[in-house]
Length: 186
Image (cartoon, rainbow, N blue to C red):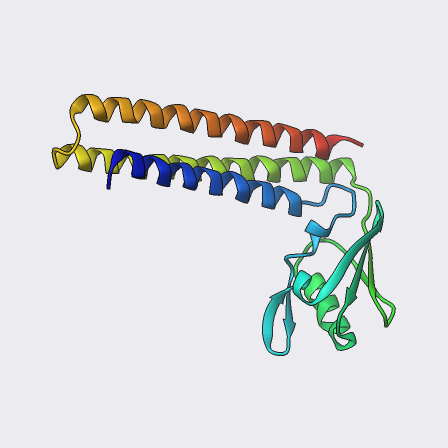
């Protein structure tokens, strides 16, 4: 494996951490209805666990309502059960045709809780980035030990890697700050 391959693999790992963070942020309830709140809830259909988006149409008729219309009417009860069991804090209302979920406005206390959760998710992303950086650094050291690269190449590779890590950490900070502002906005 070359220095360039190692850098490409590290960069891919960095981007995975950022995209995972964005997905996690989309799942957080911020007082507005959004398909991201429920689309990944796992539903037991026909003996197989499937994401909700695979068994029903999810729509947002207004800013406080999520509407779920299953493609198979027999899926209403399992979907309702799955949403309750997912501990999303949302209460589904089954009317026999579709499921409506009213998203309550957030209290100040709940906003502070979600902000803490946002910070924890951001720290998890930073940990993933540090782990990927360490893996790449170890690969560089191995290349140096195998006399594939020189000491100078090792240092320049580490510097390039650190610049990329700093850039990704700044992106994580920007995404986190934007999400915190979104959560605290009344």
